[in-house]
Length: 198
Image (cartoon, rainbow, N blue to C red; front, side):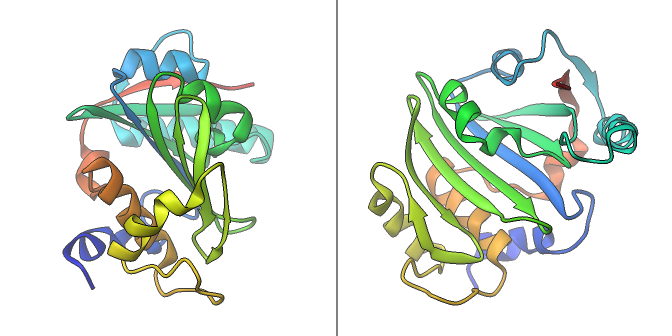
């Protein structure tokens, strides 16, 4: 197990992010711009617990069918990291084009009741994506560009069976691309939170 995978194994359990969430890494965009691209008119600084409270209330009202309704963003070097508890918007094909315009984006969605996805997009084009629980299921304009990063993270793109720790390994692939390891510390920092309810 690589050091980054050790740091990411927390994402396999039902921890603070639970069993449905999306984390999106966006290069060269500050948190206010990220919120704008997600469709939020403005943002306010909140702790992760406060974001989770807003999400819980919205999910209870909507029975969870519309996602979490809110996104929180924190900067990390030249990247911004967008966190959607109970959400999946950052991973949607119709959204990732706008998120990645003039930028580079990596999005990982865990959804234990549907399908998890990993997507890598550059300037409105999905370069590559795969299903973390079935890495041979790849798509995009040039999915082979992900092969080196997948192998470095211990994921075989030809694997026809579920790998151990698929979500943590998908985040290890993201760390290879972005240089950002998504540790629990991200949930301890103040987030710029925007309302993306539809």
